[in-house]
Image (tube, rainbow, N blue to C red; front, side, top):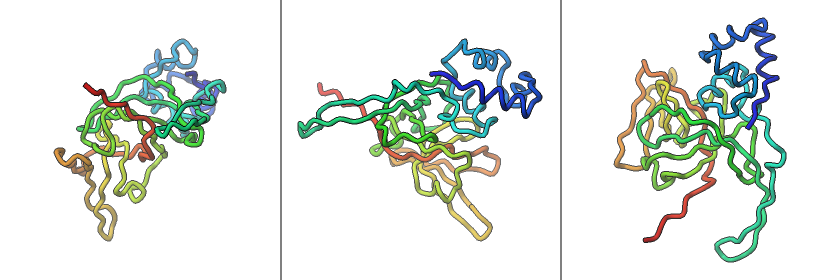
Amino acid sequence: MKIDVSKILHTIDVSYGGNQSEFAKANSISESTLSQVLSGVSERIQKKTLNKICKALNCTINEILILDRTGVKMVKGKNVAGGVFSETTRQIPLLGRITAGWPVDQEEVIEMVPVSASLWRDNRYVLEVDGDSMSPVYQDGDKILIDHYGDVQLADAQNRACAIELNGKTCLKVVRVKWNDSGPDKISLVSLNEKFSQINIGKSDDFHVLGIAKELVYRRTPKIY
């Protein structure tokens, strides 16, 4: 996976007068990390760092990734009925694991995984579920497709499973909003597994909807003992 550094350099030139140190400071990125990204020394960039760069550039993750065209492949196989199928796949970012429990820090580096080409969009990425609070719909180890928006509105997230950032930590939850005449009155993050209690968002919480879960793209085959 490679980053299109020309987009970053353009923003540094236009918005920061070519000063890389100012860009790094303004976006809470260490100068050494920025230097590695711009020089291409490291292709294993952390998700948190890439998110900061995308926010600074006002772009999606896919817009600054250089995707190898050889990543578009034709795959053949058999379905459960024994019929032969063929499908075109395309590489999409796997941005690590997202907890289906209490919000936790995520520091994974970004990988690329194949999905059906029909599902590829430049604002989509894949997350791997960690935990069982969203079962039975989303199980531990599932890979799910996320629609990423710069600013997801609560009305769009209502009653949908979403990737959430809460006080700098991430989780996968269903968003429930109660409204009054002036706007949202109460926001709750709800698990699909009834064993887990809901999380109520307080006024002092730093809460963001990072994206909306679209569909399951991979599930591990359970082991039979």
